[in-house]
Amino acid sequence: MKNKGRAASGRKDSIYHDRRFLYILAANIASAIGSGITMIALPWLLISKQDGSQLFGYVSLILTIISFLITPYIGKLVDAISRKKLLMYGEATGLLIIGSFALLGWAGMDYQTWHYVAIIFAGNLYNTLFYPTIFAFTQEVFPEKMYKSLNGAMEVQGQFSSMVAGGIGGIIMSSWKLEYILCLDAATYAAAIFFFLKVNYRKKAMVSPTGQRKATLKEGFSFLLKSPVLFVFLLASYMPFVGVMVTNYLFPVYLKETLHAGAWAYGVEGMVYSIGAVAAGLVIPVLLLKAREEKVMAGGVWCYFLAIGFILFANLPSYLILMFFIALGNAGTRVARNTFIMKAVPNAIIGRVDSIFRLIGLLLRILLIGVFTKMVSVGFISFCFVILASIMFLASVAVWRSGKAMEGQAGKTTMAVQQPNL
Image 1 (cartoon, helix red, strand yellow):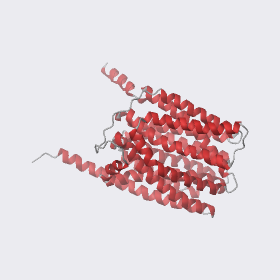
Image 2 (tube, rainbow, N blue to C red; image 1 turned 90 degrees about the vertical axis):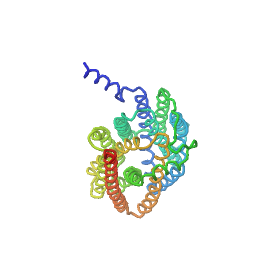
Image 3 (tube, one colour; image 1 turned 180 degrees about the horizontal axis):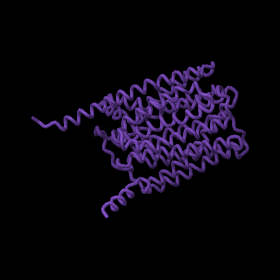
Image 4 (tube, helix red, strand yellow; image 1 turned 45 degrees about the vertical axis):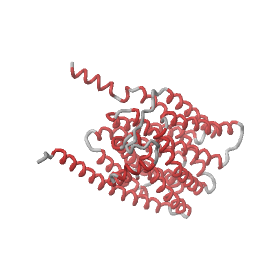
């Protein structure tokens, strides 16, 4: 009877039995599918224009600079105001902007290049706000014992949404008018607002580790400077995500200009990537029950490095297979990293600590996209992947060595606690 009681209690403790999580999941799926389809269609439409590949590179560069400039303010907002309200403001803004462009199409206006750029800008702004906010929101709402399953489930949800978006996007890009696609996107923003409204939430009173009342980015830096090894470890483990953001520019160009693939391959690439990331979301929480987060994170970074390194030797079928391992490495690292950072960083400053790594990542993206855009314009896209693989190799070594150093420090601390006073 006792065992049955424990089993029932375990089921109640499951994150899937928490109504708040189900509403958050539904909101994420709705907005991710709609915005995902739009952000697949618009870059492809832009690249298909004359000199579109180079223009897309410059657009990506400008958007990254804008994200770099606003990220510190978003980090402070995440820690200062209600995260539920911030999420809903983002969804409402997306609904207003995308809905307005959809109405232009229905009114008979022909979409021009600047329309494509403006919609891509709106999608980038939405993502810049959404991801740090939902990360801090879920850390605040759910207890630590649920972090492993939470991050695994969120990864599965996000990538399932991307997989659906990639599949639908690959089908409708060649048959639907843009205004129909934008209407679908706007409807998903409206659905997300509905589901976020249903989440029972009251902002907790935040106590800053430094005792400051006003949220400042300096608090995030102060926290990280207390442990330089932790800073190096978290920065190195963030590099696969930087690589994914940079390849959002490189992969469409490489598919079109080097592998001579059509729009269908771009959609299939997104689906294969999502399958790999879903696999990571299912497997990594199980691995985290048996291994430390540091080891799982190091394995994920190495997996990403090896997969990106083989891109240049791949034909179209093997390129699509490599997408699975690129996704497995990046998503696996992210699930373990999110679990690690949720445990290691107080919720009162999570927005600002997270924004520091996003700032560094954005700065690297600015430099890399600027260099890669120039290299692509003169036909040197292969060298872009050589540079990216070299960076990922350095990150792999750094995350492995700093992870080992932290394990050593933890071991010394445990020995010191166990050693009796003589």
